[in-house]
Image 1: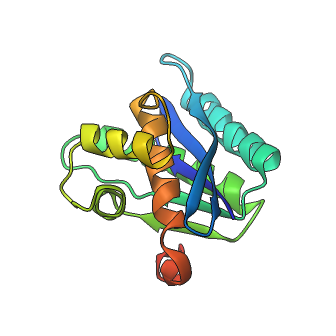
Image 2: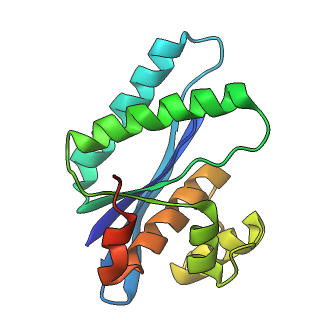
Length: 164
């Protein structure tokens, strides 16, 4: 099974592609779709949409897993990231209906065994689980890879995480 993990963002949208063969995981590729400040919103959203569209066509994932949004402070940022997430969901939906979502706590729990783990712990476990020499950068890509790993390890229980 090939999983595209996505960490939604407006400036940087992290992505990671992981292949699962039983309990064995293999990193295929990772990176970020980047948009730039002072670019009109509609053009930034189109860049994100097109970026995800390209990813699903290049890697042809069986499933796409998104990290759910979690914001406690900045409403404006939350709205922009929500719009970015929407653009990514639409692009992925044009390719497959196999869309899933996980909370940050669920991802931390699945990758580290601790739902309250910090970013460094998650990144270190991503590196170890995939046999990487270094922690993947930037953080957004590492988060997307962690989301893909979470989905790969969900197994038959994945249906409870399907987007509704």
